Picture 1 (cartoon, rainbow, N blue to C red):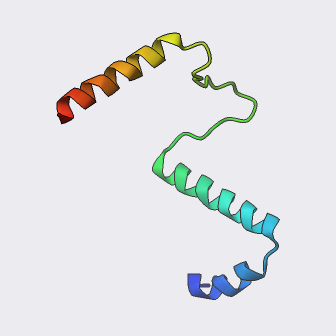
Picture 2 (spheres, one colour):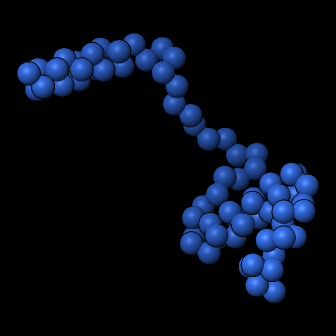
Length: 71
C-alpha cells in the first residue's frame, strides 16, 4: 500500500488514533536514526530560573553590552 493510498484512511481515524499514529512514527524514525528517547518512569533534570538570582545580572550585562555595541 502506498502513502497516497493511506491518506484517506488516516483522515477517517479518530483524533486519539491519529495521535497514536504520530507517536508510532516518531518512535520508528528515532529508532532508525539511533536517537535515544525518554524512558517511562525515568527522572530527567529540568532547569528552572527559580532562585537563579545571578541570571538577571548576567542578562542585564549582556543587554548593556549589546546596547553599547549598537551605538
